[in-house]
Each structure stands twice: as structure tokens, then as C-alpha cells.
Figure 1 (tube, rainbow, N blue to C red):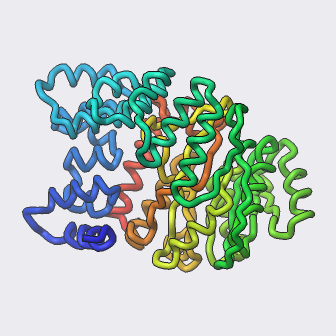
Figure 2 (figure 1 turned 135 degrees about the vertical axis):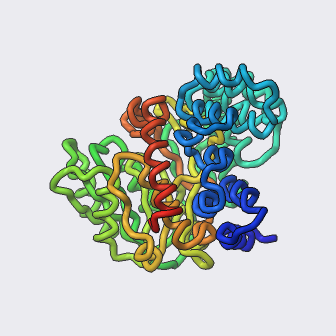
Figure 3 (figure 1 turned 45 degrees about the vertical axis):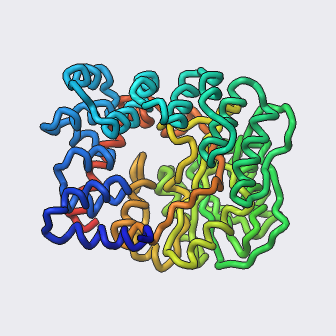
Length: 429
């Protein structure tokens, strides 16, 4: 059965009283469909865990659900104590526990993962700075994730030429141009540079770039957008009260390229407030977003716009790169994953979904889930090819101790997710 059809059936079936409602809820949760999952079985621990509602899971009566919830909140000591009291944990639940524990306890996650989970185990080993052991798990061939894991293991061991070849192979496997010269220089975002020979006409797209003190990276980020194969586009840079040279750099670029337009916030509105300002100012039939320290493949907009022929929106995938050239993800595995902020959305769909909630963190995840709730998850396909490489910065919310995936940051993110998941399912949001 086609995935789109089965997702529609799940949404419908969740609303009908049936002995199958719990099974429907669990399948919906595994697919990230929070509304039908919660409506069908709002208190099922597997639903709570698979939707990342770790606060509720940690308070659940089921000992397995409680243990996984504690792990997802970064309360590893308590979770391990619970684990000692459980005689036999099914393989699927061990994997749930490993996934929940990985951001704060990759070593324990590694212990929990089965031998055949080679890619997840390799990602944990890389997080533990054991790249040679990770490489030993990764045979040749495989899909996107395995290619990226091999690149990460090569880069971590200083084998930059091999890392570059592996990354090029990742893009080429999806018919995209290789972005890196094959040499021995360490990986940096500035090394990603490729021009596409393609020139494709599409809908007018407004690319909204929220920028705050981004003088070190804004030129690279905008350069990757200027090189896009699809036209026409406008690039709206919303400066969120920067105190460095960001405005001067963008002004110079805008003077040379009429596609670039600077919008200035008089006072700092935060990343989501800046994006909302860009959405209000946008003139395109389609809108998308790009961070001021990310690189976009020249066919990013083309690939995502192609998906809009049959959908209201599309979501691009990405991986993260540290300034030291290490490939990583704060959630540990997988390395390559869809990023909610890489949503591309038609204007008429945006009118139904609305603007971002102007919160400090997690607003992009809420926005995409709101779109799923209002228009159906099938209307926002998550695209598998890598379209963006993001810089991992210690200045970012995902890396900061108070807002990232540390125990404190995880609790903040989970609390917000608990609120909007239930609001979407039961409060009309």
C-alpha cells in the first residue's frame, strides 16, 4: 500500500472506535503522526516514547515506559536503576531506550544496541571518539547513512581525502553534483563549493535567512543561495539587531545582486520572530528558510520545488559539520536526517498553517507538526537526499547547555513538545 494512502487511512481510523485503536496509535507514533496517535491512545507508553513525550513517559505506570522516559530526559542514573529491575527487555524496547539515551549517554546506548545495528553503533562510537572501531563496522556499499558514517570516520582519523570522496559519493548517489575538491585539506564549510550547469525555471521562491551576528558565515551562506539552479528567487536576509558587520556585508552583497534584500529588526526578536518578519515581507509564491551559517547544494531549491508538484510542502535533509571538520549530530544517530527548518511551503498552505510560534527553541518542529496536523503528513514529504550542510556552532541553541540536548536543555525541549503535541491533537492547534 502506498505510504500516502496508508497515512490517510491511519488518520481516519484513529477517530473511529475500534479494537485496533491501540495498534493504529502505535503505528501512527512510529511514523511521527502525533495527532492520530494521541487521539487513538493518548496514555499508551509506546506512543509517548515514540513521539518524544518523555515527561509523560517518565511518569507512566509501565516500568519500561518510565525507564525510557527518564533516559530521554537525560536522567541516566535513574534509568539505569530501572533497567536493573527489568528481567528481559524486548529488542524493540532496547532500541527505543538506546535512542533515548544516546544524546547524553552514547556509551550506554552502544551497550544496548544489537550487533546488527551497525550504523547506530558506529554513530555512538564516533560520538565517543572511537572512529577506528566505527569504521570497522562499516563495509563498502550501503546507502546514504553508511556513506556519511564512513566520511565521518575518515575525517576523525585525519584522512581528509577519503572523507571528501565519501561525501561526494553521498551527493552523487542521488544524482547531485559532487561539492568537494578531492584533496587532503580538512573539511570546512568553506570547502563546499560547486556550480550546477542546470538552469531550471520554477515558482518564485522567497528564501528567508534569519541572521544574528553572522559576519563569519553569512557570505558563505548567501553565496550558496546565489548559486541555486532554480529561478526566480528572492533572498530575504532578516537581521535580528546584529552588533557586528553582518548588515554591512549583506548590504554590499545586495548592492551587487538585486535578488538579495535586507530586512532589519529594530530590536532582537529571536530566530523565529526574524523568520516571521521574513514571511511577512516575502513576495514569492513559495517560501523556505536557510540558516546564516549553513551551505546549500546548488540544486536544493530545485529538488524541493519539484516535490511541490504533488504536495503543499517539502522538507530537506542535512548533516552537521563542526569547525574542526567533524561530522556529527547532537542526537547521535542517524547523522543524516530531515531538518524541520528546511521546510519549503506554498503560500496558500502557509496561509492555513500560519507563522512560527515565537519561542526560544523548538519552534521549527512545532511548525512542521502543525502543518502535518492541518494538511496531513503526506502533504510535506521528508526528502532523503542531502541538500544542506549545517555548521555545528557552540553559539547555537542546539549546543548550548541550557537549550541543547543536555539534561537541562532536553527538559525544556520535551516540555514544549508535550504542550504542542497535545494542543495539536486536542486543542485545535
